[in-house]
Image 1 (cartoon, rainbow, N blue to C red):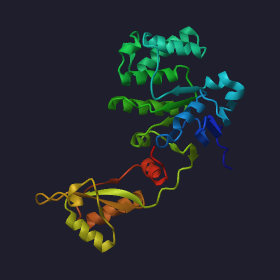
Image 2 (image 1 turned 180 degrees about the vertical axis):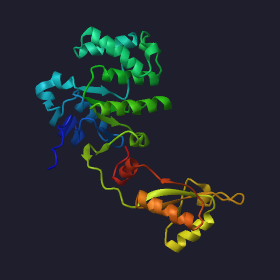
Image 3 (image 1 turned 120 degrees about the vertical axis):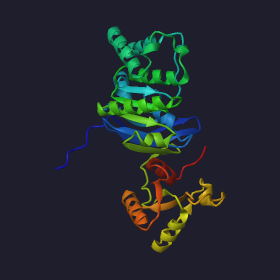
Length: 321
């Protein structure tokens, strides 16, 4: 007998929110399981931030229901909010306070004992690599450092649900890697994480699932076409063209490669070029490499033209705003 799914860390059902005549969210629903990392993906103006503010308990929906570990904001406001950590896309704070004071002030807002808040503040500053700025005023921090302080602030009360809006904005490459590792460790400890970002390649490396929102409405991800687009780079396109013709494999020049696209001359004996092919997944890609190499095609690289999130996103009918 199959076990029932674990209770939701966050369950939102049929949320709607308007600002006067403008309806920002029309019908949004999502389910976050404990220990999961979920991407929230959508174009500009799709309602992502409005949805996140409602999920964080900072904006009341006009209709619909939000429950945090079974508790609704309407009935259990403070208790439900204590279970949620919220990191907005822009960090706002009192610049005259030190980093420790920023965190302990928010700890006090969550009714943490002063000594517990101080210990957590110091520990979190170590975690986000800001320990040396513990007693420095927040105004000395760079944009990326303030972003890391914002993450520490969202974690000060050890929430069971973590909502992140563009958390990697302003971070350097090393800090982005650290962020991915930290988010994964939080999920491994049972925290449910919802993260919104326009950088889909980064989300691809971080998340377990995705919710797509468009025109204020959440959608199940449409099935990606079984024929995925891949990039194949060869040292010499001649043998590739000859072999592809014998097996009926359509090739399209990669528009980003001037050699394959015919806008640049070949140079030397080897003429590396990149082409686009449609394949049915990893097994089909492995078979292509095997058969092409057997036929004498010198392949230097084969990779998806885009990640799964990006291909799914582009498969949806999304609008630019």
